[in-house]
Length: 89
Image 1 (spheres, rainbow, N blue to C red):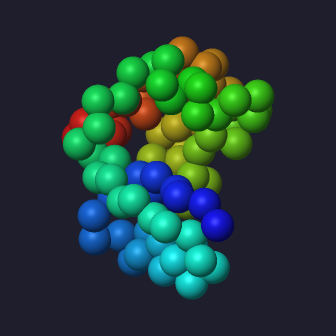
Image 2 (tube, helix red, strand yellow):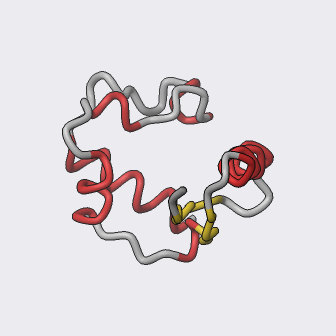
């Protein structure tokens, strides 16, 4: 199988489940704390590839659900800046 670098938010039950599923499938998982990585806009942009900007967002995130951020109306530079701030906070 594969070795997977998995960026997790410590204490996140969903991340724990996802890593468990990967390990159960035979993968080696290297867990890294997403909050401690030094993400640049370029790093994040490469991660999303050609996916539409709106798909970059978790639709159940509080700021999305509240309407504070509308993934369907945001440009790439603004989305990346918001993500970098969210990761640091």
